[in-house]
Length: 64
Image (tube, rainbow, N blue to C red):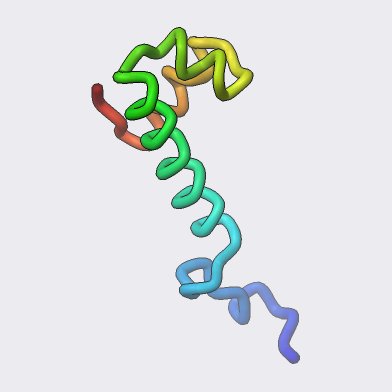
């Protein structure tokens, strides 16, 4: 098993970071849909502040 940096493929289909990003984006979209786009309600359900939700929406290019 190689441990050199070039042996690590960041675009591998089983990349954990990519999977986490996909999950988080989908989860945010679902909660926003359930809250009818109400960011205050969505942030309450998610247990985060509205500013954090807005940052995540920018990160994942979510527009409501």
